[in-house]
Every structure is written in structure tokens, then in C-alpha cells.
Image (tube, rainbow, N blue to C red; front, side, top):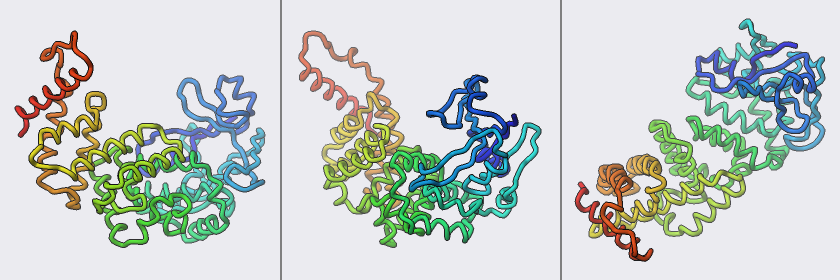
Length: 394
């Protein structure tokens, strides 16, 4: 039995990128042997295991043969005679088809190291197009490696377009699309992921919600600039998702967008349900969306109530960190003059400190909560917080 480090860890090591996850390939072993050695199987009789100590994945060398439509329609052979070269041949890209043994020796039968040196994203073989998910992976790797000046090889582009023409993209489950998209959101250059999907005519199938971005030059440019600034601010995945949703069939640069709040929120909720996203994604979108709607209806005569209404809408008493997301979003909106700059300056200079002050406020020190009904408690707490705002507002 021989064990090799494979895939993205090798690629990132050669590029000088910090390795986040290590994947291991086992040659010359069997499913039963792995179980007997204490490795925990993933799924039902599938040749991938988790090392109980390191929590890293170990996969038996395997070959795959397409039998039916979609990315699940493969026969998988993982007998102990499958060689290292055979396993690497089944992989998607040459830059992901490099192995390294425990002595640090590289095994590169498909010239992945050369393609890394030449900054080329290239398929290993024409079997590439058997798996429609690989289109998404190429788009993801392009955005991930853009800062290293990688380009997609022209022959790989041809295969990507064939995948679209063959119509197999519709068989990728929403859950699997989300796994790839989440990885995109966790990195930079998100716009270029969408750009690849658009250039091969896949965006209408994968993300029809944002297809209008690429039909309008102005919106396309705004989208590019927004995600560029998101990268600059190093925003978290939820802020990126919020801006992604802002482009659903509308333009964020139209205030009418926020008038139809019920319709917009329904669209985003349906998207989250379709892709089975964790509840936090819709939660943060809804909170931020409604706060921006408040901001757009700002009345200078009631700035204290206005600020307090924002804090209540965000529910900062239980979700303090959401204020950082809002500040990031306001900073980006300021760049495009979507909200009055004086108002954003006012918010940027008050939101965080006042939010922190109100969150840490000990209500019991000011109000006797005994023998008082719920409605009165809420009113008294609101008035107390309002008083604190008036005393501390810049």
C-alpha cells in the first residue's frame, strides 16, 4: 500500500499558497483494509474515508466510467490494482492531477507542473466533458487563480461549451452547485466566476436570477466594481451573498428595488430554499435589506428614532456582529452615491459605538422590571435607549 498527497494541496504548494486542506490517495489497498485500519467511510461503500485522528480524507485509487446522464452517472472501480496514473487520469485538470509521496517526490504524468509554470488551466483528457460539474470547477479555479495570471486553455473552453450544448447542466443538483458556489464566495474575484459562466452561456442555466447583469453594460460594470471593493474590504461570505442577491433581476442602483420588499425577499428566500442554504444567509439578507430600506426613507427630523429603529431591525442585542456587515455594505454603497454621502458619514461615525453602548446597557440598573407588564417594559426600554442615543450621538 502506498499513500500520496494529491490535488489542490500540491497545486497550492507549488504556487506558494497556504495549504488549507490535504487530500490523500491510497494505492494498493481495499475498502475492507481501510475499515480494518480504523478509517471511517464517507457514504455507503464509496472509496473515500476520513482519518479519525487528522480528519483528513483518504481515497482509494479509482477509475470512473460514464454510464448515464449527469455527474452521478458513473461506474466507479476501486480495486487494489488501480494504479496512480489511472487515478490521476480520471481527474479534471492537469494542475489538480499531481501527486507527491512521503519523500517529497512528485508524480506528474499529465504535465500539471508545466501548466502551473505556464499558468494554464487545462483538462487532462476529453473525458473531462463527461462530468458537467467540471464546468463550475473551471470557473471557480479561474477566479481562484486569477491573481496568478492563469488562463483557460482554448481546447478546455471548447469542451466547456460542449457541456452546455449537451444540456447536462440541468442534472447538477442545487446542493452540489451550492458547494461549488460557496467555495467561490469564500475566495476573491467572484465577478470572474460569473464571467466564465456567462461566456460559455451557462449562467442562464446555473444562476438565471442574475443573467440580466451581462445584458446591461452599466450593470455589468457596477457588478465588477462592487465585487472588486468587496475583495478590498475582505468582506465575509454573508456580505458577498447579500450583494449577489441585490442583482436578482433588478439593479441595486435603482431605489425602486427596495420598494418591492415583499417580492424581493420572496425571491431571495426561494433561492435559499432551492439551494438548501443555511438559514443564516436569508436571515442576514433580510435584516440588511430592510435596514437599507429604512435608510433610504431617512427623515432628518427623527434621527434618534431612525438610529434606534435600525438597531431594533438588526436585533443587535443578539446579533452584534451584523453591524460590521452593515458598515461594509454602506462603505461600498457610498462609492456609488446610492445613498446620500452625508447620511452614510453620519451612520459610519455613530453606528458601531452606539450599537456597542446599547448592547452593553444594563436595563435593570434603570428600570424596575418587577410587577410591570410586557408592553410597558418594551416602551420603557425603548425610551431609555432613545435617551441614551440623544446623550451620546455625535
